[in-house]
Amino acid sequence: MGGAVVDTGDSGVKAPDGGWGWAVLFGCFVITGFSYAFPKAVSVFFKELIREFGVGYSDTAWISSILLAMLYGSGPLCSILVNRFGCRPVMMVGGLFASLGMIMASFATSIIHIYLCIGVITGLGLALNFQPSLIMLNRYFSEKRPLANGLAAAGSPVALCCLSPLGQVLQYKYGWRGGFLILGGILLNCCACGALMRPLKAPKKTSEVEEKKETKPKPKAKLLDFTVFKDPGFVIYTVAAAIMVLGLFVPPVFVVSYAKELGNEDTKSSLLLTILGFIDIFARPTCGIIAGLKWVRPRCVYLFSFAMIFNGTTDLVGSLAKDYPSLVVFCIFFGISYGMVGALQFEVLMAIVGTEKFSSAIGLVLLVEAIAVLVGPPGAGRLLDATKNYMYVFLLAGCEVVLSALVLCICNLLFIKMKPQEPDPPAKMEMAITETEMEELNKAPQDDQDNGGGAGENGKKQAVELEATTESDDKKVKELDSIELENASKKVTEPNGVTVEPESSL
Image (cartoon, rainbow, N blue to C red; front, side, top):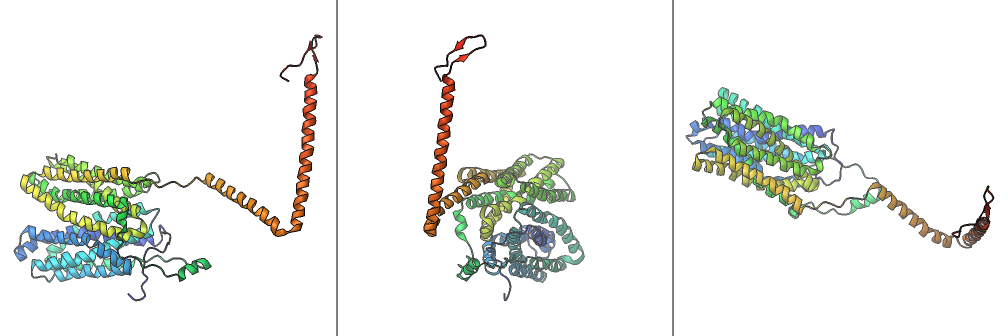
């Protein structure tokens, strides 16, 4: 990589929370949109692929499945590459892979070629962009990180609303081969987004102590830090995220088919996903703003748990839908809850593991989620084949998401201990004053010994003067006390001529 600056993330540079970070946020917005929306946008071409290669719908569905599996499953590989070379080079290479896969797929002669080109090569390229973009976002934002995560996550519904209609237009005008070729050119924008990921540079150190520290050999950074599993918060989050992913993506996959089975037209049924995506666009930034509030941010884990409970409950209630208006209401509430989950999932992970371990943590979490992604929708499909009723599919998805929320919330309450709070500023000031006084007291006898006889004579004079003043003060006190006693012992004559004896208490 030559003279490229490797952004290891452990330089201790404070996050700027703005400046060039907004350019990084824009790049992350675009990358997130490509990563999540592209597997769904490719499904527009499935009908032509079925005609071209004489395969079934289940065969073409493997394209999106393999692409998602690569996006999630290559998380540890991305972590190793980022820790070794930095985010910017990895994203540039990933953009080339994503574009190359689509271009090669336009010359495919069998469905296997498309599996390898779009599923493996393009999927790997998107993975090499998605994970490093989140890592860079975490490094550039600290105080405003919840808002930044919400805005970046909004790239997914925005891209979905743009890429799906674009895919249909390309299919009608240029066919699936021309469409793949043009989409490959569009994915080259990932390289431009990668170029925006400028690594943070530490300020020049001038103090002698820091220069000495630099001379000491630094320990080699771990390519994949498995010590994150020692953190109970990370383990709880990983387990909860795996359970959540089993049911989170099921309703968007089956809601259109559910509407068709109820007797609605194809165009009317597809409008449900448009409604869901439109609500999702506004839900993610709004949730990011709420998560950034001072009294909410320390409890972001519980807000995430609420979002999952909201999502799961929406699935449970949506299973009772029997007509199109009820499905529209379901999509509105599902879009809100889905956007909340999307805005908070990586924010919570960043808050749990911190900046230094985030590059390894996200790779391991995505690997676990990849298994759940491959199991969740196919499992729901088998349940649908066995029962022939969409109600059970939505019930299963809702139960899985609610279970994940309960695991995250209850385990955090039971096993995560609060860190000891630091003493208040007044207490710190008292401690500081006490320490300085103790230092002065300790220095006093040492100064007397160091100064020799002169200091000793001065000390003796000061002691004599102190004794004289104390003796005179004692004499004055005694004189005052005797005068008060004499006055108290005297008899008092009232105006009427009666003489009053002093009280015995005096």
